[in-house]
Length: 80
Image 1 (cartoon, helix red, strand yellow):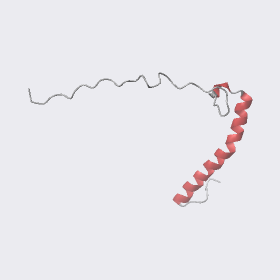
Image 2 (cartoon, helix red, strand yellow; image 1 turned 90 degrees about the horizontal axis):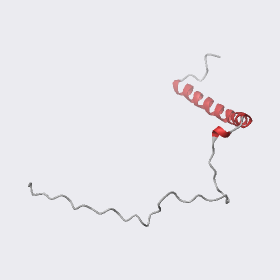
Image 3 (tube, one colour; image 1 turned 90 degrees about the vertical axis):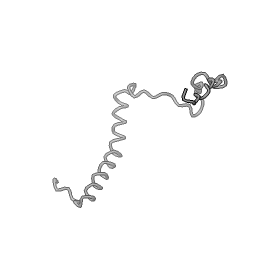
Image 4 (cartoon, one colour; image 1 turned 30 degrees about the horizontal axis):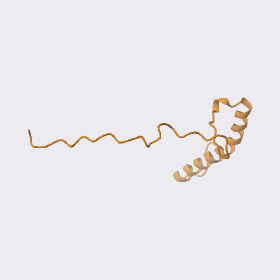
């Protein structure tokens, strides 16, 4: 009625060549990755992981705090 015609309807794309589901999982070959469930860690494994991570995390945090103190002009921590 206003002289414009709607665009022609497009047919759905042929999806027969696309895979139907997720790709098949590789079985136990070299480089195969298994799903990691952190809830399956034992207390000993969790303690070991904590001890291995605390050092690097502490160094990163100290570096960030020092950078903040340098930025505001206070290289010394007055609380100590």
